[in-house]
Amino acid sequence: MSRSLVVNPGGQNVEPTIVSPPINIIVFGESGVVKTSVINMLTGEPVATVSNQALGCTYASTKHRATIDGREVMLYDTASLNEAGARTVSPQQVIQNLRSLADDLKTVNLLVHCIRGTWFREI
Image (cartoon, one colour):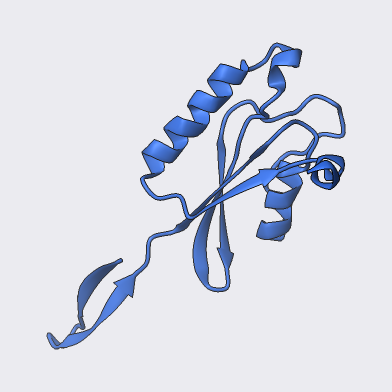
């Protein structure tokens, strides 16, 4: 958080305000586990493209801005971990892209790993 001093037109100092950085949320997982639908649900509108196909439709990280409970939130939709079958993005490249995104952001507040319900029951 950073503080900024606000000076009103009359030249008097006003109480400093606290400017909070946005909350960074990275959503990742395999193709078809509704990562993009989760982002659309959180933003409250269809900001991200979804696919009803077996192949994913996100090949690089895409940033979506939302305001949740009065806070600025940046949601990052990422390429699927198993896009290699579609010959779009290799598993190694997906992992590298996730690492680069986290490094670039400096602060990641939440990682959301979307998995199939059947896997959860097995775990």
